[in-house]
Image (cartoon, rainbow, N blue to C red):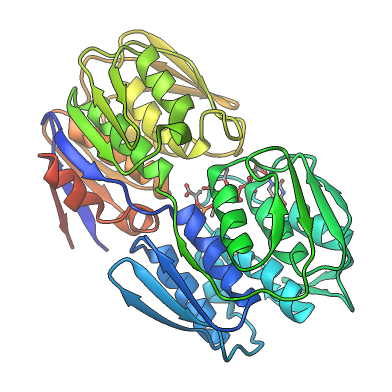
Length: 415
Ligand SMILES: CC(=O)N[C@H]1[C@@H](OP(=O)(O)OP(=O)(O)OC[C@H]2O[C@@H](n3ccc(=O)[nH]c3=O)[C@H](O)[C@@H]2O)O[C@H](CO)[C@@H](O)[C@@H]1O
Ligand SMILES: C=C(OP(=O)(O)O)C(=O)O
């Protein structure tokens, strides 16, 4: 198992280029199953989750070639297939296969998706949405089967704006007869990216980015070429790394619009933020405590809760971080405590008493963003830290240590 060795207390300095967004790429890759022909997807990050999606799609007869950050995906010879349970379990995003397969073949059978252990992650909203447009869903022996003679547009109202359920509903409804309206839809930028890709394929979707999405069904979709949006979570993590090390870091190739909730928070705690048309720069010195509550977009993203908790652990004063999206997303707290952080979890909140210094320790990533958060803590800590379970970090941060090294960090990957 690989680990990172980090020597802390180096101020990060310089600029990095933001990679393409994992959470936009995964549903878009799944959406290529909706057409027959050659789709070209640019700005695809090299990540473990993307490789798993490639493996799953190749079972369906999709041939995929990577040229640098471009995927050339040929869906001309798709066949229906089962997805082995071990691949479904690899990541949450395997559930994205459901919408497109149902849309295209009117039938899908798969087991429950896996993914990071950050609390229960039911798929009831996905299934309800598919049922609303005519699918009959059966769940038995750990498998879900959905089929429909035809899919028919309808109103879907989500009790909660689930990102994945909104995306699955969009991908199933594009080939339905008539119009589907999704209310209380999630508003994340990745949903707008999916809408843009599907529309390039010939879909008629509008409203992504708002809480109401309208999909006028069409009879077929064509292959398309698309550029994935930048990864706002990666950008946010590097901004927080800049603040954590009292550094001066510029993230290039990122639209500040994606990150207002994060840049506002960072300003609130005393760092200087410069927003450009296509970049964000952070300069930080002393950091003050603040309260943070995760919310669906445009609120503060849950995927940056762990990284900002690391930062607040060395802020001046006491902060309260409340996680409202996932029930069990504070596993990094025990590890941060080993590094000298003073954090107490009470229900859905973490009370963080800022300390002057963290100290290096051997810690283990418990999930993707928890792993990112521990690296951030190690960058600021006195002495040397070892971060185990790097495979979680590789799920979602492209060339993480290389990018940090380019900013001056002393970080090495080893066995
Ligand atoms: C691949 C991907 O894009 N992952 C992101 C996506 O995950 P994901 O799509 O899984 O997140 P959701 O928005 O669906 O989940 C949010 C909340 O809704 C609940 N829920 C969801 C679906 C459902 O059928 N029933 C239900 O109760 C979940 O348990 C969770 O408490 O959005 C999350 C919230 O921004 C991010 O943290 C993940 O990085
Ligand atoms: C939780 C995440 O991803 P997933 O939904 O794929 O588990 C994440 O990207 O932080």
